[in-house]
Image (cartoon, rainbow, N blue to C red; front, side, top):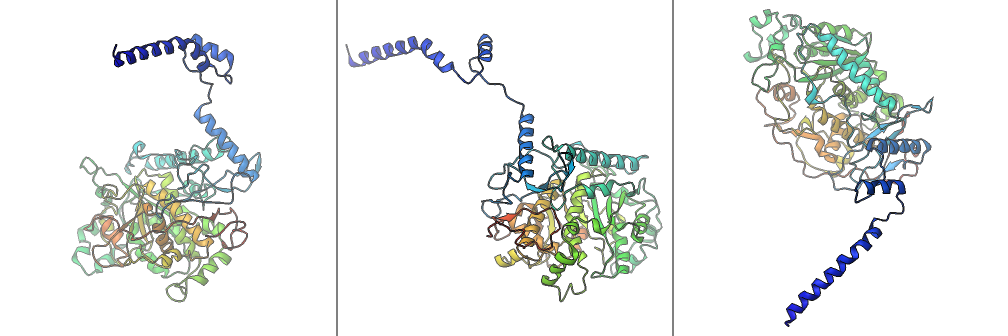
Amino acid sequence: MSSSTTRIQMLIIFMLVIISLVPFLLPLYQYEPNNNINLKNKNRANGSQKLKPAKQSTNALNDKKWKSFLNDLHSGAAQSPHTTRACEPGACAPLRYFATNNYVEQSQQTPLYYIEPNLDVTGRNGMFASTPSRPWHESSITPLDPYTENANDLVRTTMERRYNDLVQSDSNSNNALPKFLPPQFPQWDRSIHEHIVAPDAAIIGMPPECCPTSVVHQHLTKNFSKDNVLSDEELKDCTCRSPRNYPIGNDGENINRPTATLVTAFYEMSSKHPRKMYEKTSLQLLSTADPMIIFCEPKSTWVKFFTEKRQHAPTIVVPMSVSNLRLLQHFPQETFWKKQFEIDPEGTTHHKSINTKLYLLWDEKIVLLQSAAMLNPFNTTQFVWVDTGYWRNPAPHMYRQSAMRINMTKEGVADESMLLYQMQPYNFDREVVISGDQVLVGGNCFSGTYNGIANMYSAFYETFWAMAATGKFVGSDQKVLYRTCHTYPSACHIHKPPKGYRKWLNMLGLVLPDLGEKVGEPLKLTSLIEPLKHLPIPPNCVVDDATSTTIWKDIPKD
């Protein structure tokens, strides 16, 4: 007999022995002493081969973890007063400082800021990873028809419903994982949203009435170019021409629906420009057909002014006192913002006569824009911040058509990015980036989808806090943006001008209305910086000095 035949016979015998032992081995495999006996017998009767203990639903488990975290947070055991991230420059996600609901255990308590639980080392994939921040989605909204008979009622109903959804989520957040993301620093409540939906917020311009009169736009005829002179026919045409010039729809037809909401604010204070200049220049912005949300001081002449000038297009005029701005509530003018003036690199030149409230208004822009976008009363898919005094030169295209006529994502702007306009030549200097003592992009006009704005909100205000807590100047949104884009580049699509710099009017003059300057590839930043490894969580209180030992207690500095 050959050796190969012998090996085959031995293999067959070995396999027979193993098969004969299987009935004895299976009971040992199936024995699970931690399982309930009754459940095990029931599973066997049903032919189950593997026993599984009863499990709670995913929602119930998440709610349990969330409530446990809240209990630990209020007892002081949940987390240290700072966090640590470890990733390459540009790879981290911005930290989001959320606020607890102030109704805890039947007693009013000051909300606490906290960092989302269970984040990984890059600041992602935490407990809120699948939690939306807004009560609407692009796929579920219908563009506003301003000519609908009950358009005003529809707008109010829409934003009130969304506001109530947010408040309800906050109210339930003590007992279950919130349905929507909680308020986020520098907001600890829904105060800004509440002002937008308040009864004294005037909803006007629907159905559109006569366009602004020729008297309003007489100064436009004094420009230097024939292209910028409104014709006699245009000036005499009192049927509202703007809504028929809304952007073309996906089907190639003029859908007579707005695609973007413009957001602006005006608070009268000593600033770089006189009141009369703002009265004159704001008329050009106000003449556009795009839906607009305008924040201004209650009972001021500006409420009447804006209401009168926006009868031709969908508008919400929001009376809200400057004292309600979130950054003023957190950071007092007489201490924190006064200190900002003292360290302002332009304090003795460009900002010599500035009111320090203008600092916080510049930095509050993204709070106002994001709050308006979260409610999205006009059901648009794009949102634009524009300074009220943006137009210092005649801009008849604002009178003739919609100011926002491009689809940013189709033009190459990522959904997670905000579109910004480069104003200065770019040269990387790490120390300058960290100090923020440089302007790269304009703060007078920027735009994004909701996701782009939300990403920038997180990136901007984490950077604002990091700079404030380390003694850097934060009185200019443009300088905070400089460091923001170098730390969280995904938040920024920096449009490069085709020629020259300091084109402060090109964003709303050429790019957004699609009048000859196309959105191109974003500026490539030659180097990036990492976020601070150790940064105190903002306290929800009055902060006179963010660099104080009280803020930094027991926290190592990078």
